[in-house]
Length: 162
Length: 284
Length: 103
Image (cartoon, rainbow over all chains, first blue to last red; front, side, top):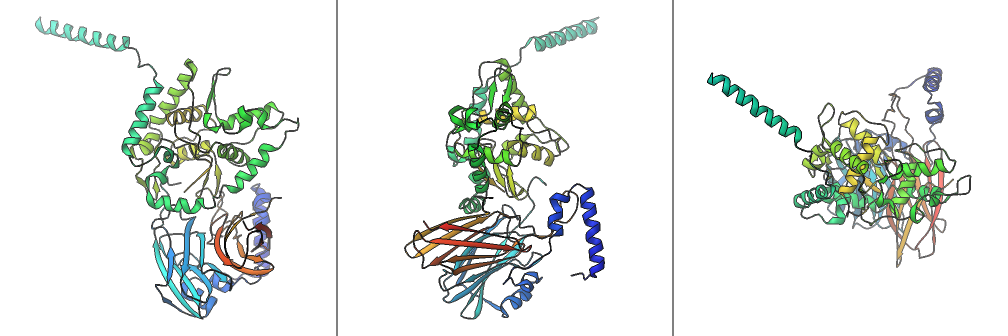
C-alpha cells in the first residue's frame, strides 16, 4: 500500500474534488470521496486486507487449516455472473465458533467471516463477488482448530461483451 | 437472325417475369399464423420446457443457471423496488388523483395486456409510456425511462399480474398491423457492426452459450420485466435492455421508447401470448 | 426514510431461520465510474443480529460481498412472535438498523 504524506494526500484530495466538481459529479461522488474511512468496531482489518489466504487465516485465527470431509460447501460450477455468486457452507462438526469464506483469486483473499454463538446452527449462505475463475474455500473453526473444504467456480465474462 | 429472335424471346421472358414480380402482391400480414409458427418452433426446440417456464428465460433451459436463480429467488433483490413501487403507486398526485384512476382495474393485474395499440393516436403504447401519460395528464412531470422510479412502478404492476398470461391484441386496423410488421422486421433484421439480428441470438442461438451467458429463447423473453440484473446491480425496464443490447451487439442504440423498440415490444409480446407473466424478475 | 434492511425470520420449533437482504452499494474500491475515476470502497463491515439483546450471529464483511447483500443463517432459542434486531456498520461509519418479527 502506498504511503503518502498528509500534505500531498490533502493536495490530491483537493485536486480530485475540483476535478469531480468540474465533471459535475460533486454531489454524486464527492460525499464518498470526502468521507474518511472509519473501520467498524470489531472488524478484523488485517485479515480483510491480507492478499493471500495464508496471511488472511493467520491474521484472523492465528492457525492453519486442514481439509475435512465434515465441512461442505455449495457453489455453482459456472457462475451466472461473477458479481453475485451464491455460496452455502455447513458442517457436522461440533463446537463451531466461526465460519469464513476465502476466494484466493480475488484481490483480497478473505471474502466474509461469520462469528457463531452457542445459539447458532453451523451453516451460512451468502452471495459473493468473484473476480475470476477461482477456488472457493470454506473454513470452519471448531474446537480451536480449522477445518476446510473447497470448490472450483468458473467465472467468465458475460456474453454480450458489455 | 435466329440469335436475334432468341434474344428477343429472352428479353420478352424477362419482362414477363419482372411484370409478374411487380404484379405479385406482398404476403398479407398474418400475425396469428406467425405466432403459431413462432411458438411451435420453440416448443419443438425445447420439448421439456413447460409453458409457464418460458417466462424464465435462461433458467428454463439450463440446470446450472436455474439452481443459482432459485437461490437468489429465496430473497430476490427486486424486493426494495417492489416496496418503493407500491408506495409510489398508492400515493396521490398533487391534484388528488392517483395512478389507479388512469388504468383499467385500478392498474392491478393488467400488465399482461401491454403494449396496446391506441386507435386515437395510432401509436403503440407500452406500460411505461402509459405511466408517463398518466402523470402528465395529472399535472406531474414524466419520469425518466429505463431506470429508477419507473422500474419500481412497473415492478409493482408486474407483480400484480404474476401468473397471468400475455394477452396482447392486434385490432383489425392497418396502423396496428403496420406496427406489428415493423416490430417483426426489426426482430429479424441484421444490424450494426456485428450484423446480429435479435433472432440470431434468441432464435438460432437460443439455449446456447455466449461466453458465460445462456441465451434466452425469444418466446416469453419479456415476461420477467422489469428485472434486477446482477450485471447492472439495479433494476431496468424492457427498453433499458433493448438499448443496452443494441449497444452490446455494436448496433446503434435507439432512444428510450423509440418507435422501433415499441414495435419490437409489441411483436415480441404478441408472439408470447399465453406465456404467464413472471415479473419482476432477476437475471445475470 | 425506509430501512435498508429486510428481515424474514421463520421459526420451526426451537430453530429460527433468518434471511436478510440489505440495500447497500458494497463498492469494492476496484471499479471505475463512467469517467474512469475509481469509486472508493464503500461497504458494510459488520452486521450484528440480536435476540433479547443477546448477539446470536455476527457477519464480518469485506468488499467481496455482493451488492445489496444477502445473508441466511439459523439459530436456536427464539420463538414465534419474538423480535430479531439487525444492525449494520460500514467503512464510512454509516449505520442502519431494523427489527423483524419471527413468524
